[in-house]
Length: 561
Image 1 (cartoon, rainbow, N blue to C red):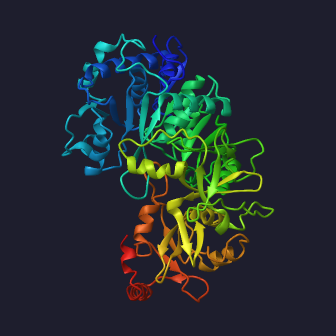
Image 2 (cartoon, rainbow, N blue to C red):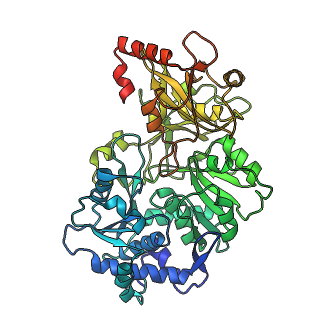
Image 3 (cartoon, rainbow, N blue to C red):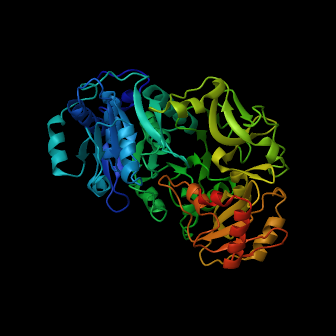
């Protein structure tokens, strides 16, 4: 077998001859299992097919798009691309029309692997030069059959090397077209080895992949560490809170990753007496929040570890045993991380925390996390403007808000897009969200800016309440008054009550949509008028008065953004 040390291809090829379970799917109703050797065999077959199908033209990039749910074909094609020296672009099935076509064409995909359920998305799209393979069709089975005897390393487009391009993964953003981050085989193989060491992954583990594989979280933090540590992988086509524990028990899962709202969805399910009867030992992800992490541990007996390391690879934060609650850790080895005020370019002062770990000087301490040292960032595909913005002044700017305590521990405070400026004071949405999440009636919270009618922003919060609960303005006001770390500018001017929190395809809160609708939305909105106290419903007369005030100040157009 021809593989190069330090590559994903080597991790795939290592499975050859190993007949332990490698890939499980079907859930609790009809679990099916592929052995590790079979996974390598099937990946090698697809690699050989890929080599024969890829155009020979000099300008043909060795890129394939994968438009699939979390079916076994997805990791098998990841393995195939690694073995063949090709790159995979994960295509988001929630994209539509010209935006979907743009993602496929922007990443120069010559082959698109999909399934019948997603074929309606492709109807009418102009995809010149793109060959479509439908994995659950007879034509696909016939096309693949001649390659059944292939072995890893036999068919390559280019010999896999640490610098070989492996993933083109779109980063989510609130504005503009998504950017495709370049990820090499060497960087991702090293990241997998690091997670194996951090979480002591062994062949006895089962990694439950319930986050979408078209997103970096599931591949980099779930599938790859399993591959590197010899663990099994268990697939869920799409995340389901109601099926989560049933799947975990059926697969004997020990580890899972999460993004954004998934933890809140799980906490919102009806409690059961057997909530702690399972094999899970660890969850790893981002943006669960300290309150929800504590609730999750109390209910399910599972520790959630918050991590930080963007798909781009520009900066990472490493958790250590002495990391305090709420913090993510310190700078990773070789990183020179600083929290910078983007307006002045100077380092923010250390955070002041009270005895309960609550931030007291957020306006001064919160800034953008910047890596002033070496960066593993490998660029964005065909997007020099975004790449230059990310690496300006010789530093890597993460686009994320953080604060750092006096001991050097770093705390996540949201995205730079989620920063608010209220009465000339800078606020971070994530900090306010963590405070509002303490309200017992709330199962999900999102905080975002709406334009103030005169200048700057006002704070708006969307709240999803416990089933059967009604919003009590008196109880909410009393709760806010009792929070010692809720600054005078942090209280929401507007409160929107939603039945369920809108989310993106990767289970992150859809803040861009919430910002766009603002306080003019179909859901009930409560507000605290300037100079008043407490909350009352935002009625038609209130809305008309607000719109007139925006018009008088020449800021009405801001409500249309």
